[in-house]
Image 1 (cartoon, rainbow, N blue to C red):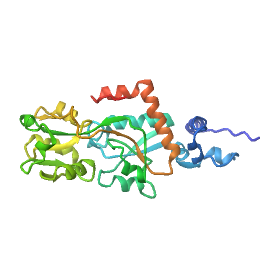
Image 2 (tube, rainbow, N blue to C red):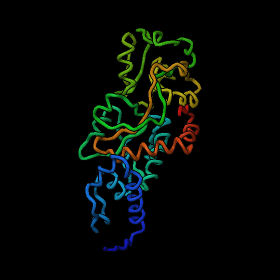
Image 3 (cartoon, one colour):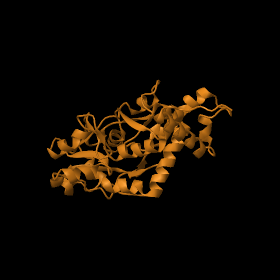
Image 4 (tube, rainbow, N blue to C red):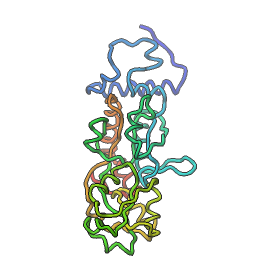
Length: 289
């Protein structure tokens, strides 16, 4: 048997993490993604190259796609700094892989294309991505880590005006949504009588509602509380009566079942050890687990 000394401490740490992950997943089908043979050569040890997990560990960085326009889940400041609930969830996943995170900008209109791009732009996507059957037809989606549902933002002075979806679905009501995501889809399907405006930058819409440029923003119960707390002109009168019910998860390409198993394990661990609850409390989100 050959023995080899790894001189680089970082490489050694990543190698140990990689084999720990192999042992952790050995009872699941995910192991097949990167373990197709019983023998390891010296080259295998220096550069584990079987599957997405090994690639990430060797790279030392988890590439995370995120829109950066969805407070408080994912937001990118002008200096390129990312923050938010989803950002911290991604960092927790990376920590369990023993690697760093690097965030890659995507957008709601291009999210699916960016996830499916070849060569890959990022390893997984996170931050306000609702788990849907449509997405699961072509991609992998993790277990949920945040409950969500469609609701509205409006000016506080008009909060008594909107008590139901029927109150919004009128020609005189101006509704504003961001393009390409489920908010636009919901508005087009359920608000056929309202006047709908699509605004390119999601993060700018709450201010436009506050200034009276539109009456209602279609948003999520995950996003609305942040804007109500930070802008006294805004209200979310239907927060306790969301129009839909769902969960937010992590999105990635098919063929990455090993990585998906690690992501799901990380979510389960975060639920068990209290990490996920603490993050909910930090960002003022409703914990549903």
